[in-house]
Image (tube, rainbow, N blue to C red; front, side, top):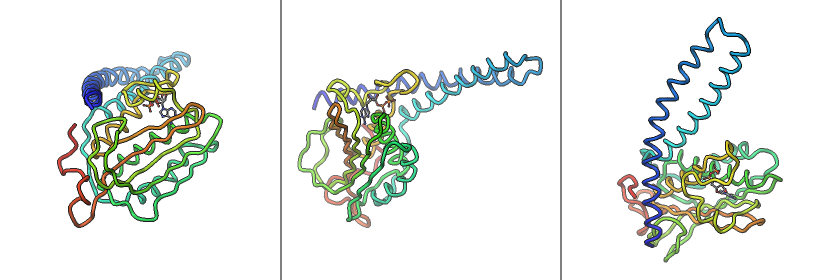
Length: 261
Ligand code: ADP
């Protein structure tokens, strides 16, 4: 437990640091992009020079995208919690996810017959699913299957692989599985660290899973990962069930205060 606490403090510190750097760096980028745009509009510029300016702007734009995902990670985003059926959120975002993963990978989903009432920021849950599905796709260069499944589960006591121990109670569980390359032990223990990536430079920022971790934690949920090299990976997300019209169903649901570590 102490180790998990340390891990979450470490993430918090890195998040703050990264946010500060991203903010200042972004201001500098704006200056670069501003002068670049002016230069591009210069009528005296030769075509081959213009091409070079385009490259500068293109890369500055990529850097801006990186800083914006950094800011998204570090910012304690204001959550707009609303009661919703988790299954509906998944069914609504499904088409979009299918487009993201492309043609070589098949997306299957099996949501529970019973509704799963939760209190969430659905935009952030979409983001979580997006990140998980994107990683699943990247883990299956030769094609494969991504399965999204939901069910209800009572937690008595659980050794979560990240974050603090979950409160006992009823949870909505979403699992996202792939038939991809899987992870070795070292990778598996580091995936939630900001900037940890095994992807080629330019392909991965190492922020996707730390964003997922942050969002789930803010929802008072937790996330587990099971992975086997050459077989595949399953992420399992637990969100406290919420009783509409009453207090939280039994004891697991989130307090009203926005998530503080
Ligand atoms: P990025 O995708 O930019 O590398 P992430 O934080 O999303 O950053 O993921 C970190 C690392 O976790 C990935 O580089 C990869 O090694 C590993 N990973 C995440 N999801 C999967 C998966 N479904 N299968 C195999 N490895 C994964």
